[in-house]
Amino acid sequence: MSNLGLGSLGIASIIAFFMGAVIVIQTASNIDSAWIPEYTIGFTARQSIILEFSPTILALILAGKIGSAVASEIGTMRVTEQIDALEIMGVNSASYLITPKIIAAVVINPMLVIISMFLSLTGGWLAGVMNGSVSTYTYIHGIQYDFDSFSIVYALIKTMFFAFAMTSIPAYHGYYTSGGALEVGRSSTKGVVYSSVCILILNYILTQLMLS
Image (cartoon, rainbow, N blue to C red; front, side, top):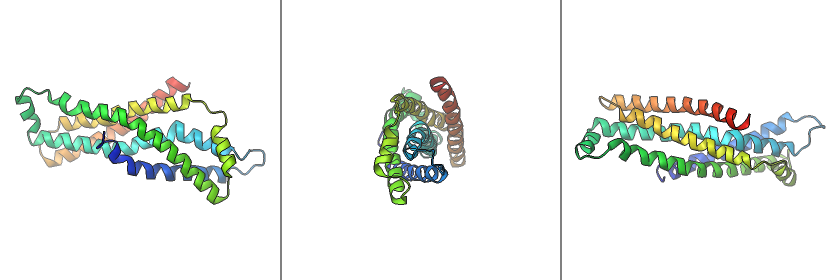
């Protein structure tokens, strides 16, 4: 949990903060009608961040960081025969090396997403206030307007599926690495690419199942 989750907190926080700021600025710049209330900025930022940006964009970014780390670590253990040594000692190497990583990611990633949501909304608020496009009261009113708590549940469910994909797929490619250091790099690349594609497919399927 420390390596896969807390180790990614810094980059996740920076991305979330500025992502929220950009969403608010772009939303405000595209609202040019007097018929659209100002609190729409906060409402749109909340919906965009909670439903899509925090769970999905953060998962794609973490897939690159976590996926490459998992695949390269297990792949290096394979080519240096450390996994063979575990199996000789009677240890179930796949369960011993992969399962803790999957459990850790599934547990810690929803916490990262919750932090990401808060920082994104905070970044949007600061950008909106500093830009003069929305007041604090109006922005908060937009965040609270017609809020459905299922949006949070939906985002966290997606995050758990994404966490499973971003650890299990790179772990698979790392576990079945053969050759030397060059093959470890290839396995790491495959793990990141395939897990990213899987996250996008899961995003579509889960959205269709839970929001349609």
